[in-house]
Length: 99
Image (cartoon, rainbow, N blue to C red):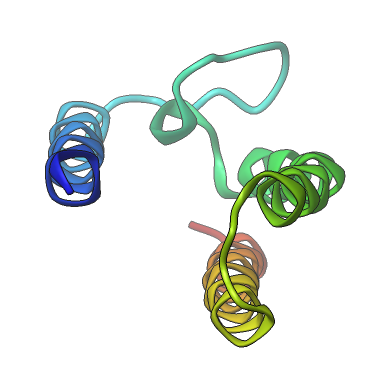
């Protein structure tokens, strides 16, 4: 139960801090940047598309290693994929908008 509560809080906190730190800095459009928030929206779209196969593999690994029912696993998978799609759509719109 500890992991279910603490880990998301840590991840959200790190994301919020990183987004504030890199908000006003110049974004990387060529080359490699580890920090997602340092990338331009175009590069974010590229990274999102490149990580899609990894996301699918992770979902399949969770399916085989967990003892969740199929209904719970399907709900979990749909939520994860919906969040991914919304993130990709947002980054694509911002890229085309020119930000």
